[in-house]
Image (tube, rainbow, N blue to C red; front, side, top):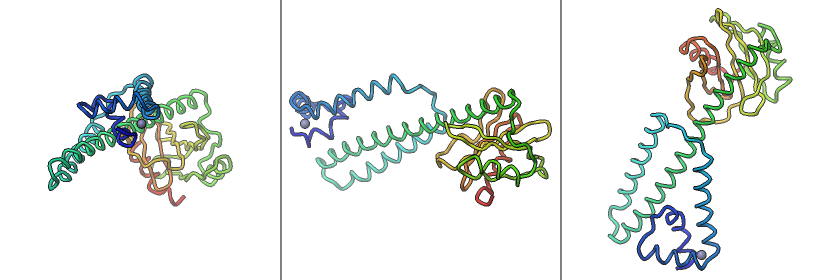
Length: 258
Ligand SMILES: [Zn+2]
């Protein structure tokens, strides 16, 4: 066996999936070839690192459903591809496609979990920022109900220009704005009053089109998220979930025309 033959099997071998003569030849090659042995060791190290460092979370049902749908789709493609080929080629091909599907699945699960975790963290961060600002009595750095005052104040201090609207006619009165941090980046926060409730709306230029949980409840606060054409929007308040969701979606609908 040479390096070209060994390379595609190294990962499968690390998972204990190469047996028989091929497994024997591969083991022999790994003993003799430092390059391939290095690749094999890197796979083992990565697995150890992942097990040790990636936090464990229960997958939400929506993620389970997406993973299962992907697997079914991959199985479908694999059986279509096999049809009409000779027995021997079919066997080889199904191995290759099986490996491919496993790789796609691993990548898919990995990114989905990371995205999900990031979005969890972002929601928690937003609640923490809201509580800190409320307790510290500094919800607003610029206190004004005039969007033509709040917007330029924020634009002058951030590297983007957040859309700012007073929606007092719909029950959400603009009371001002401040700068805060989400995901380690400065963001704009628009502060609204809805009846007796304060609402923080975090705004930043759109970062990802990944599906994120639109609504979460963290430590007694509701966090409603959405993405407009240009911005990511995260609203935090003890306002009821439906009202908060409708409000944040209302803001995001027009964010391309500030
Ligand atoms: Zn080699």
